[in-house]
Length: 326
Image (cartoon, rainbow, N blue to C red; front, side, top):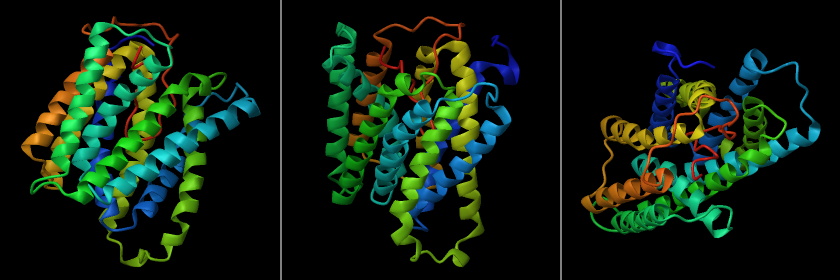
């Protein structure tokens, strides 16, 4: 792909992706206000799975046959990156504001990815990265302390934030297996397999709660919201993300992830009226600074035009590149 201007600009496509992902946190929160969190996760990613299947039919590579082993490998990754991640994410939304999710998940994911890579000896620890990781941990600690006290906090919010942190752990693990999952299979098709497998398990989890939902009484706006999450945040966002990463490389694309908390904060405060106290705000600022330092190591990555690097399988709110921590 060649770098172009206007709507074909890879950075514009990545920015549109981050807007879709950033707004998905508050949109998902609106969903769990009407239906059980397990059902909310299923209808969203069930719809996302259907949308991605259509996308594969329209945009996928039909000439290359995918080995059964590779398909099962991608589907297995969906257990962690789609089922476990979204199970904890939607559960957390039923207890805490989406504002917290939009800070903790996209920012802690690269921090956790870097920590795991360093702990396993797969990467070397530079001074800037160590400082960034320590700042990230300190910021998360301040954020959690703020969530547990004051008028804006409480035990429910603290529990929800803990679930968001578990979601970030799941996504970090999903990111780390990305290169193996992508071996011998195109990213869009791998994402579709993972999403479909995760959606099936989410359906099993949601089955006991289905009877509680009065489907005929759900507002029409809720269905429009679910359609937006499935088509916009799942399918369109991923297609734009693949094109953008293929042009500028995953290192540059990972920097765009720091716009997700900004978009989410605007949506959560303006549309849902959510807020957090001064201590949580200070913790979020420290966390963002630490994550940015850990990812960039104090310098901006060089621009890449080659298509040699591929993005990880991404199917939901956040698309942390597999090379985020490299």
